[in-house]
Image (cartoon, rainbow, N blue to C red; front, side):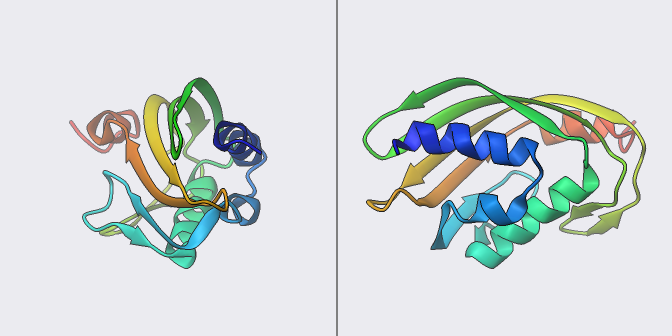
Length: 139
């Protein structure tokens, strides 16, 4: 399976809200950089917790991979997501109660793959301030 095909499959898995299946596409020592966290997520356990927490916070979340660009080891993906915050939202400072508010946002993710087709490094880009505003957490 090509790396871009893996990203398409992961988008489908994400839309089915299956964090266990998502994590199968990461190497054991994978590192994820996410603007919400001051430090990278290191290892499958931390990454799986992040996916599980996000899906719990937005149990109806749906994502569309709008653009996928691939080179030898890296896939750049432009996403569009929407969902409702009906579960607690995990943040580095603790959990925030569900707001009941809907979100819509774009995101970019750069995923670097190893020779076995597993993600070893991922960089996520999205507007955290706009997300917090949609959730009613900023003025």
